[in-house]
Length: 479
Image (cartoon, rainbow, N blue to C red; front, side, top):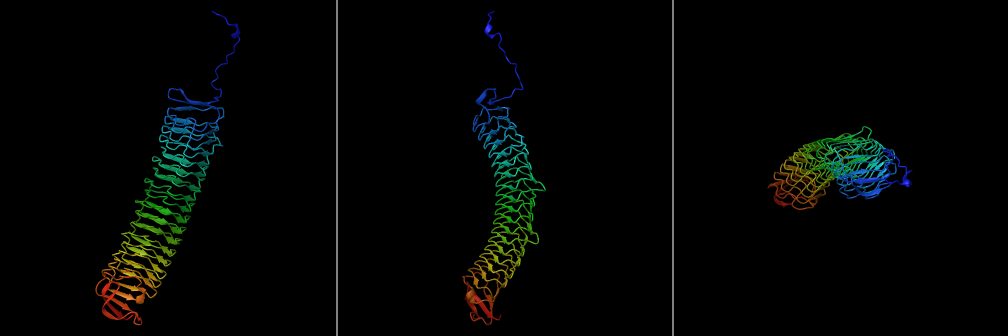
């Protein structure tokens, strides 16, 4: 055997299994390295779109402190990831589109404070994740379209970006910690939520636009007393069956509960000052209660339109009822209008089931079509403060047999009482000049009796007269 004296003193160190790993590597299912070896922080787009990557070995010498944007994006075969405790930040889109990623372990060091935007978006196999107590912020759509079934937001988290859990269709439960101050836009939109829990000392002050939209499995929610505003379409098309708006809330946004077809009861807290347009439109509401003393001053357009309300008492604090506010509430038989109302918007009660209506003396204007097609109204009392009656205001009120027009009215619009098929008598305390439109009494019975003031020279007593669309009017001056 040859002898090589030059190698006789060569020292070969023994293998040390505990020696630090100083490089990070990605491997495929055969154990073959994919992509380049990396030293230190994981760079942006490191193995992005490498669809054969199934596992990753990180350096464990504390050199990895950050994972760059898109670092593992679209690594569709990656099934698990354990991020070293040395990492303090995870970039945007870091694991976006990792559709096979079933487990992800986040760092637990106190300096790991943020999860970037879109970090785990589209990780449809990811059913669970623990967010460490060090995290203070979660980025936009961080877990969008994930397979999560539940999520607990720790008390340390103070902000979560919009759409963070959007389209998580398997997400059934969520618990929100004490630190979060707002539920941002679309945060749980289109998710599978069946329950959400806020801690008793919640800091949430606002529920953002479309935050819970299309959460059809969400039958109930307790809104924290810290909340002051509910955003546009926040609960649109949810599965809610009842809702109580706490006294802390001051505004309900447009479309907030629109198309919640299972929603039958709503209680409005004392702090609410405005109910937005379309707020409860096309919901299943059968009753709404304004908690006394109410602060509501305005009810928006279509706010309760197309609901199943049977009665409503509008508080005295309300000054305006928006156009079409109760439009097509076909079961609405009783409406009590508060004494503070000064204007009733166009179409406000059109096509409702009202059987009678009393318009308070503070009301100045009755909008176009306000009571149009309310065929069941048998009696209507117009308050003494009313100055204008809009076009079509009482058109098609076939139950009316008589109406009194008080003396402050200066404008009566076209077709105001058109097609009131049983209207036989009008007690008219105004001059003919108040009829500023045309055809106010068109398609009413013949003859129609108008009783005018005996001292009003604008009226001439007689029979068979033509006036405002009726060709057989009897005028009697005896008021």
